[in-house]
Length: 336
Ligand code: DAU
Image (cartoon, rainbow, N blue to C red; front, top):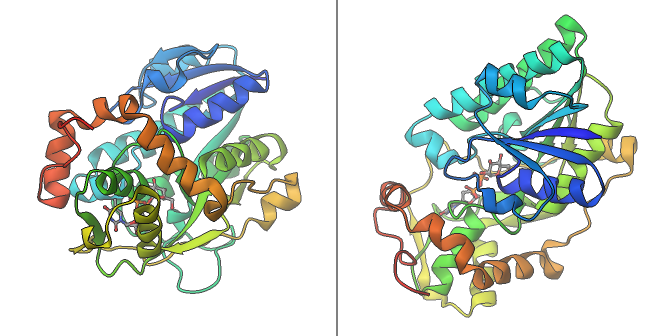
């Protein structure tokens, strides 16, 4: 297969690219290389990298030449950033998806939309199936839900070949240090405060990035057109328990935990039922969060300062950190 992977230099996109190249697919990456996308994430792989924005029809048209399918990972993904300023989210996530859909339709190729459990909103008990209405709560999740609706509308209106894969919280190597696990790992290792939002009793279900990547491929190959498929993790955790585990793995101190002001509109819990994808493809997550998944991820960050240091040692990152946490990051720019 020849794939156009949009956002393929980001965290989840690059995990997918690594898998597909190893499996023998031909891959072209379209990536704007914004703050979270990095050429280094796909370095050494036999892929063509096109630098461009998904909401730019000319860039998309050129990049899509000759491909069999478009897989769209390109997104602004961080909820806290969307609360500070949602404009880039609407542009990339909503308009970008629309632009890619138009191109996929023009070419008559499948559009696989990478989406998120956050489009369903928060759930106290049980797990969301794909039939649940979309009730997003943040500017980020609203922009992703808008994209999902546009994808489904293209199928309804034009009979376009589309599939959606909705994942739960991902963890693993190469995640930008703004998300819970890399932020806590770097702070823990540097003796810095561990900023837990509110009481830390919110619940997330963790899915290793390689399992999400294989689930997305399963949906791409086995998914029925016009359908959404949940790709859920099976490791449900309180945030505070994840933080305790990271403290244990890094040799940090419990006294570093600092409860800070809660995220605005914070979703309490996400959970996905993935039976539909399992039945369609036989997909199942392989990495266990408690049996090696978190530990290998924490060690990856500790062993790869050359990967994360250039990301945090920037005025933009320090300004972001100050706005969200009201302090300078303790791991930048000082040496490890
Ligand atoms: O569920 C899938 C989603 O997971 C993706 O669609 C999003 O793109 C991705 O960012 C992630 O969203 P979350 O908001 O759940 O992830 P985050 O790592 O930002 O936060 C995880 C939980 O940890 C959440 O309840 C907020 C909390 N948290 C996060 C940070 C960064 C803290 O308590 N302190 C922190 O410093």
